[in-house]
Length: 415
Image (tube, rainbow, N blue to C red; front, top):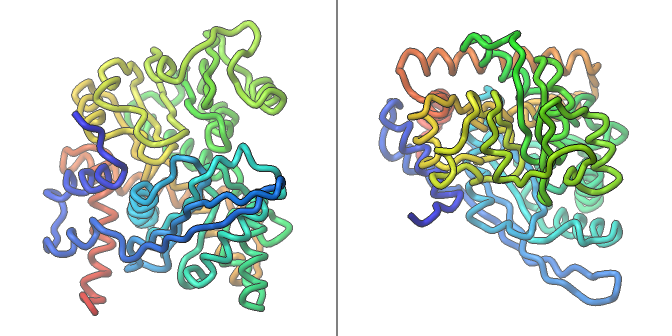
């Protein structure tokens, strides 16, 4: 069977939840497409004097609940369909977490690993310039994603402010604290996922028991998930990145693995551990599997080989609908991305509020509010799941789409 592209995945997930949503068909049809997409071509001057043309996009999916919100990723495989899909998932994610936002997403088709710091800055400023008429505090608030970080956000906001001639720190989130960022933003996606996992394990009777975990993807999200696993007494036995991974039955120490990654650029090849591929990691006999890289890694081709009891989706769209159907038949619980990784956008919302008011919070306040926000969302979605006897993802979509469509009804279809 031909693999669905990410946008088709989103549409299929929406359609799978539709029978449990009370909504007029036209509203569901509207949600299948983005409201608008901006595509630009960036001429990037490289250090050797040559010019590389880079395609870039920003998708605005839906803003019934508030301004568009979503990250910007730099990756060679970024394309329009992916950006549209990610903006669509962001609409569901922000509504799932009950945030005053709609869904947006941006991306540049480039391998950021090959760029010098100067080239990365020129690319980032060119993207921010091209998007400056498409974003704003009350319009669209971008944030970091794959291969973007607080430094990139600082270049974004500086460029935007120079173009518009005013200070506007709340237009981008995920910034360094020194330029208006929030404490607690760096590990927010992973920390939120751990809070959601805690509530999941509580509901299925596994909280407090010694459990093993495997983390696929060792960027910002995956590495922080490893770091925070101790909160739930999870023993991480395998980690991987784009080059491969390492397995150790006795457990992998976070400080050692993160230090090795910094020195070698990968977690592959750690001494006294078994080499493992990304594909093999997914199929390990662990209690919790944490995909934290890119979309579409769990499919109908490998789902039947997965042995984990719980899959915590910290990546966006890591499980295809066909793969999830197989996992469900096997009794594997998938904690959907739209809830599991919503900690990042939740703390981005906190940063947006702080930037607008100038009232900056302590790390304890940020983490407490994050826990409260996601625990409340989890309980509401779990109740829908149990009451209607549907998948966890379907329940999240039911709650989110109901919120979005309620707002759309009041606003009306105009123009």
